[in-house]
Image (cartoon, one colour):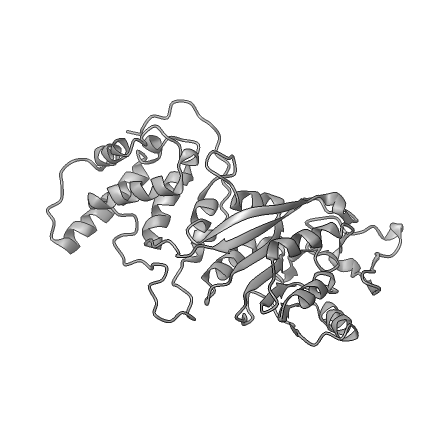
Length: 374
């Protein structure tokens, strides 16, 4: 169970429905009241392990969730499975039965010892448990990933997973419901934003099941969701710096029209500076047309001037980026970008900026009068 390090306090918020409970610290949810008696013990699969009161553990009482995770993972007998946070091994035992080998990252020594003991007692010798932080430890080569994550590391874990090489076949992940909904959001959904669009460059994400607060005892304050991640084959090629620059403009004010977003002084100034750099590098004579007018012409050419980013799909964003680039307008100061698949070494991760997966989640209020700024 990977921690989140910061300052001098433990800010871990650990839900562990796959292997025995929810472990969290840092005061984001109330600690169990000592007047209610000692914290419950994990009693799953014939085992009993006292929960740690200081972590405020929340135990899963709905075994049907594991069945849904296994069905979504569709593990083959030849598969190596990478599991994060096995806990006492409720899911782990199912993974050991289905796959050839399970490599688990577990940061809690008690849980690591318990899951190894449980596997040994069942006569399973295909489990390897590494006591490590999943964000810092060395990842194995794997076919399927089963992860049950602290909410605070959702974005950095997603970045590392999508940058991992060689590519995996699928991943079945437990996230906070709010984060998961932004991952699987479709065009027009309220949650649709940079996170969903950028992740879609690499993988297809679908919802598996919701995990209600009532599925745990004691119940946490938030619901969870299981999602399935399948890498694109072949992956989409794009200059990541250019792409992210465009997405930040479009979704910085996602409930405003693109005409309004591209008409701000800061945006036109940045595009003007990038355009001059491009002209200098290519020996092109700069146009005297104001950048605001050029940007509006591009938007009108694509039929997007009065459209909001939340209504635009991936292919249309690519068309918009191409139209800007054709006019010498760039979003990354013309620096060379990295593309998926541009490395000869399949084991080396692509040069992907982790900011692509930053979960900004900026709620924009609808405002009237989407006029361009003067």
